Image (tube, rainbow, N blue to C red; front, side, top):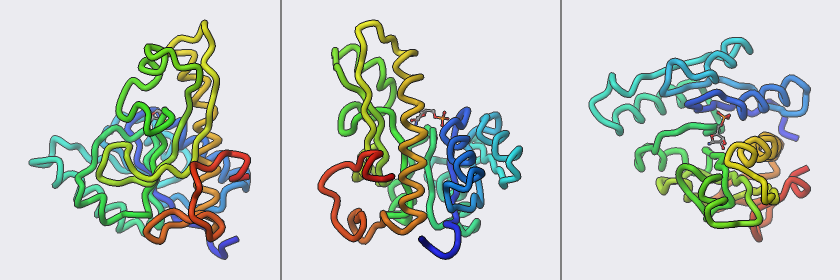
Length: 217
Ligand code: GRF
């Protein structure tokens, strides 16, 4: 167990249900973290309201105020750095981040993505899963690199796909697993079990494959 709570910043573009799960785990004493910032590219993001209600510093930067993607990303990540964050969690953050900016956070930024990567990077993962007739779906947590949803996958949670499943039913069922998976990964990093030294190590060993919730518990 690390002596002091891990300083965590979160980027979110939407409702923030993954953020809510992290805050709930922290409040239950199950996640040794201190949230130092929640930032968004959307001033209307529900995640910012959640942060404010939880007394966490909330920041919205408007991409329209910047001449290009890279300058927006540099400004946003400067604020993340200034917050003292030791870990950056992308939780429903819907922008592709400039490669140079991301490189500065190698091993210190993770993302939750609603598919069994490397399947279905990008958007509409539930629909693509159904259209492919997959019998299994899932969520992945990976370290963030310049490649969209392409960084090393550290953990995955799987669900079966039922014949009556729709995009909505699949998304809802998977979201519950995302919340558990992201919380478990942040907890493993906060407790010093999962860390990065050029590649991901768990309890000092290279990952043989994505960790499961059982391994992370
Ligand atoms: C989640 O499915 C997450 O995996 C994806 O965005 C969706 C919404 O996340 N990146 P949240 O409810 O805003 O946390």
